[in-house]
Length: 112
Length: 118
Image (cartoon, rainbow over all chains, first blue to last red; front, side, top):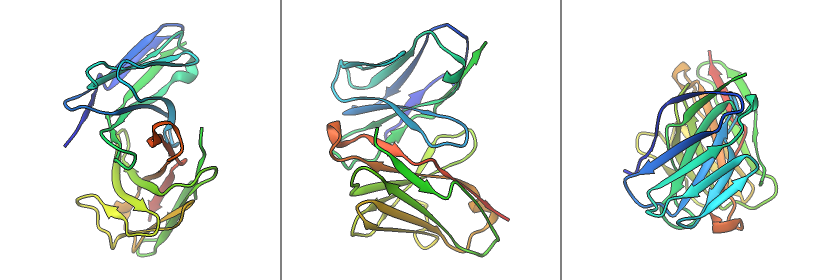
């Protein structure tokens, strides 16, 4: 089945640094979604992307839908301690009722 | 963004009893809701797709008689873990797709339910 690849599993950065996360797929996705999950909570939608090449920002977050439709990246600029959490990419191949496929997530740690 | 409310946020039950978890979309109507299970330090594992007014679609390996799903209205889906056992202890999360949102594919998640079976 379709899989989304996220690596590394963990990232450690210094407060104030920028960080970039990548998500790749072996097949084409029509939608890319980025979520953040805090411990004991459900994932929160950060950014949704719908067109190849689309670049969308949400505050200090920027995400892009890759031209090949097989990848997406999320950038966090000027990181702060509350950016700590697990970042999941997710995608859906077709239509409005397609199931979301999730990556395994990247755990981000921010050192003060 | 859209709001999905899940209740309870945590529950402890005795082995052999049943537990019901509710998932509500508060500001939109969701014809499709999804139920996930998440183990520590792992990604979300889709259990089933809940369709309003029809039977749920279960993923391979998920027992439909064990995990009963009801989607009686456009804003409510329930997951009942029947005859719970300690191995059913997990974090259960629902999500609902907002069909009127951009692309109709944005999925919003509930807060999750931590189930502990003792």
